[in-house]
Length: 124
Image 1: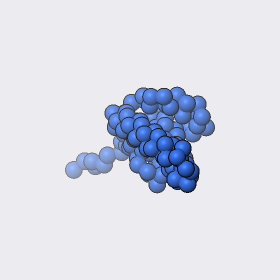
Image 2: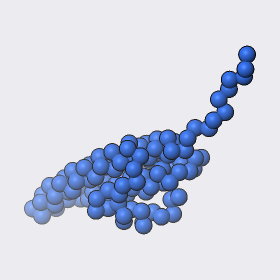
Image 3: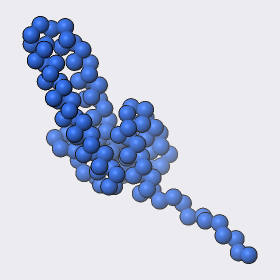
Image 4: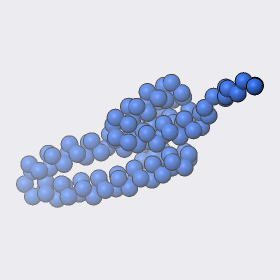
């Protein structure tokens, strides 16, 4: 009987796609994706790690600002609801980025994608 061991390594495209998808799943998922990417670098993984990092940072920043808006009279009320609209926009951008990751595409998220690539160019 012939030795039937499979010595073919896992494709980096599939690993990169997995990293890209995981990077959109909360901060913990982003950290896991970054660690996985360090062990198996891929262009698509790095691309989506940069994209999702900007989305995560903006979501946290809006959440913090929303708390400050609660303590402001009148204008705080308006800014609080405006922050919800912006947050919903970030969720839409998150879905667009996640869909691109699932499809294995390096497609920038609207408005912020190219900025994220330039801002976090050090993640390779």
